[in-house]
Length: 110
View 1 (cartoon, rainbow, N blue to C red):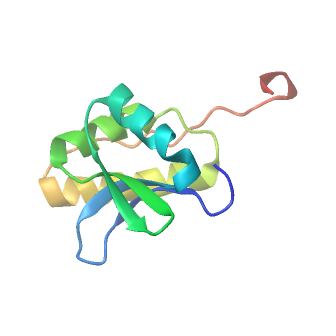
View 2 (view 1 turned 60 degrees about the vertical axis):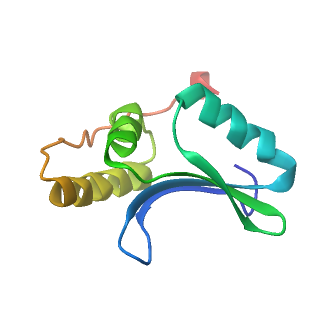
View 3 (view 1 turned 135 degrees about the vertical axis):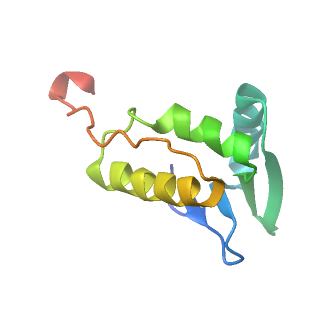
Protein backbone atom coordinates (compact mmCIF):
# COMPACT_ATOMS: atom_id res chain seq x y z
CA UNK A 1 0.00 0.00 0.00
CA UNK A 2 1.19 3.53 -0.74
CA UNK A 3 1.62 6.29 1.84
CA UNK A 4 -1.66 7.20 3.50
CA UNK A 5 -3.30 3.95 2.43
CA UNK A 6 -3.97 1.36 5.08
CA UNK A 7 -5.31 -2.07 5.75
CA UNK A 8 -6.28 -3.24 9.19
CA UNK A 9 -8.33 -5.54 11.36
CA UNK A 10 -9.53 -3.57 14.35
CA UNK A 11 -12.27 -2.59 16.70
CA UNK A 12 -14.07 0.59 15.67
CA UNK A 13 -14.72 3.46 18.06
CA UNK A 14 -18.24 2.02 18.52
CA UNK A 15 -16.76 -1.37 19.46
CA UNK A 16 -17.57 -3.12 16.17
CA UNK A 17 -14.99 -5.52 14.78
CA UNK A 18 -14.01 -4.62 11.24
CA UNK A 19 -11.59 -5.23 8.40
CA UNK A 20 -10.77 -2.04 6.50
CA UNK A 21 -8.68 -1.16 3.46
CA UNK A 22 -8.35 2.59 2.87
CA UNK A 23 -7.36 3.99 -0.51
CA UNK A 24 -7.22 7.38 -2.18
CA UNK A 25 -9.67 8.19 -4.97
CA UNK A 26 -7.07 7.33 -7.64
CA UNK A 27 -7.11 3.72 -6.41
CA UNK A 28 -10.87 3.36 -6.00
CA UNK A 29 -10.87 0.75 -8.78
CA UNK A 30 -8.62 -1.42 -6.58
CA UNK A 31 -11.27 -1.46 -3.85
CA UNK A 32 -13.98 -2.38 -6.36
CA UNK A 33 -11.74 -5.18 -7.67
CA UNK A 34 -11.20 -6.52 -4.13
CA UNK A 35 -14.93 -6.41 -3.41
CA UNK A 36 -15.73 -8.22 -6.67
CA UNK A 37 -12.99 -10.80 -6.08
CA UNK A 38 -13.96 -11.52 -2.47
CA UNK A 39 -17.69 -11.18 -3.06
CA UNK A 40 -18.71 -9.28 0.07
CA UNK A 41 -18.08 -6.09 2.01
CA UNK A 42 -18.93 -2.49 1.19
CA UNK A 43 -17.13 0.55 -0.17
CA UNK A 44 -17.73 3.83 1.61
CA UNK A 45 -16.55 7.36 1.00
CA UNK A 46 -14.52 8.47 4.01
CA UNK A 47 -13.49 11.94 2.92
CA UNK A 48 -13.32 14.06 -0.21
CA UNK A 49 -10.49 11.93 -1.66
CA UNK A 50 -10.56 8.76 0.46
CA UNK A 51 -12.57 5.55 0.23
CA UNK A 52 -12.75 2.45 2.43
CA UNK A 53 -13.54 -1.18 1.75
CA UNK A 54 -15.16 -2.45 4.96
CA UNK A 55 -16.22 -5.88 6.25
CA UNK A 56 -18.05 -5.90 9.60
CA UNK A 57 -20.37 -8.91 9.62
CA UNK A 58 -19.54 -12.15 11.46
CA UNK A 59 -19.45 -14.36 8.37
CA UNK A 60 -17.39 -11.90 6.31
CA UNK A 61 -14.89 -11.41 9.13
CA UNK A 62 -14.56 -15.19 9.51
CA UNK A 63 -13.72 -15.39 5.79
CA UNK A 64 -11.12 -12.61 6.09
CA UNK A 65 -9.58 -14.39 9.09
CA UNK A 66 -9.41 -17.65 7.13
CA UNK A 67 -7.75 -15.83 4.19
CA UNK A 68 -5.07 -14.31 6.43
CA UNK A 69 -4.54 -16.86 9.21
CA UNK A 70 -1.28 -18.68 8.53
CA UNK A 71 -0.49 -16.60 5.44
CA UNK A 72 1.21 -13.58 7.02
CA UNK A 73 4.95 -13.01 7.16
CA UNK A 74 5.63 -10.04 9.42
CA UNK A 75 5.58 -10.82 13.14
CA UNK A 76 3.79 -7.53 13.83
CA UNK A 77 0.96 -8.47 11.44
CA UNK A 78 0.76 -12.04 12.81
CA UNK A 79 0.45 -10.65 16.35
CA UNK A 80 -2.20 -8.16 15.23
CA UNK A 81 -4.25 -10.90 13.57
CA UNK A 82 -3.93 -13.09 16.69
CA UNK A 83 -5.25 -10.21 18.82
CA UNK A 84 -8.12 -9.67 16.38
CA UNK A 85 -8.97 -13.40 16.40
CA UNK A 86 -9.05 -13.27 20.20
CA UNK A 87 -11.54 -10.37 20.07
CA UNK A 88 -13.57 -12.17 17.38
CA UNK A 89 -13.72 -15.35 19.46
CA UNK A 90 -14.84 -13.38 22.51
CA UNK A 91 -17.49 -11.48 20.56
CA UNK A 92 -18.98 -14.43 18.71
CA UNK A 93 -18.12 -17.25 21.17
CA UNK A 94 -16.11 -19.13 18.56
CA UNK A 95 -12.81 -20.93 18.93
CA UNK A 96 -10.72 -20.01 15.89
CA UNK A 97 -7.06 -20.72 16.58
CA UNK A 98 -4.54 -18.14 15.46
CA UNK A 99 -1.62 -19.53 13.49
CA UNK A 100 1.28 -17.59 14.98
CA UNK A 101 4.12 -19.01 12.93
CA UNK A 102 4.92 -17.19 9.75
CA UNK A 103 6.99 -17.89 6.70
CA UNK A 104 10.45 -16.40 6.85
CA UNK A 105 11.08 -14.55 3.58
CA UNK A 106 14.35 -15.03 1.74
CA UNK A 107 16.09 -13.08 -1.01
CA UNK A 108 14.66 -15.49 -3.54
CA UNK A 109 11.12 -14.42 -2.56
CA UNK A 110 11.56 -10.91 -4.01
